[in-house]
Length: 307
Image (spheres, rainbow, N blue to C red):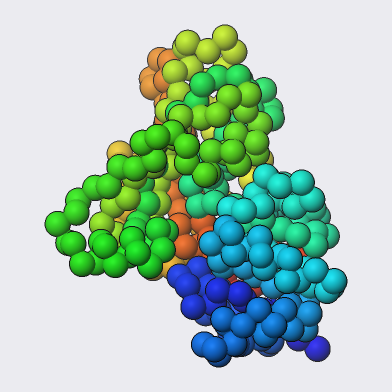
């Protein structure tokens, strides 16, 4: 029998892409609510109690309310909002970092944020291995396509085609920072500088490093080799041996659930730039949710992913 899946918020950007990935698959049967039912707490409660799995594609407050609606059911939940990413009792849905068995056996999984996916993928293995210090004041620069901002930001960029670059998060209180700190294993919150560009999808996340100023650090090649060993065998995360002179995002980017990592180093080893490139709607959102769902359902981890 197929696993029954209820996607709460299926009309949003992330939800639509999850539906697109799951609809052709015989392993899953989607529980679909019409427009009127989606506004009914009782209809949603009934859907949770009928489902084997639920994916929350909702704002944070609504996601918290949705978990309450599911109380008393056996449904296993993946929350794509940021409401539960550092909450006790929730497993962080980054199987390459958290562990595949942990995700597979979890009843409550929080989907990582798009920017944190790149940041954590780059730093967590290096900090764990002792090649970079946990107590360094790290900085993260990142740019994303506007689709990550939801319907309002999508409309703004598509209506005002004169916007070339949107720098934001200027108050230093971005909601992604707690998970970036916790899952990268850092002592201090990183200084996070996100921006949006006039492309629908795609993301580059960069962590610049002053290696020569650190009390302890490894040379760039050792950083690369550590990441390559950490992700060896992964069919989603790749560590590039080729270092192009530029890392590009293209407006024509097609949906992708891959995560590409690069380690650039100065010739004298004094500096490095750790770079991640991904689709903010793929491994940064919908693709990550489907990957976790596959593991939780005992299926091939990459089934239905665009790789």
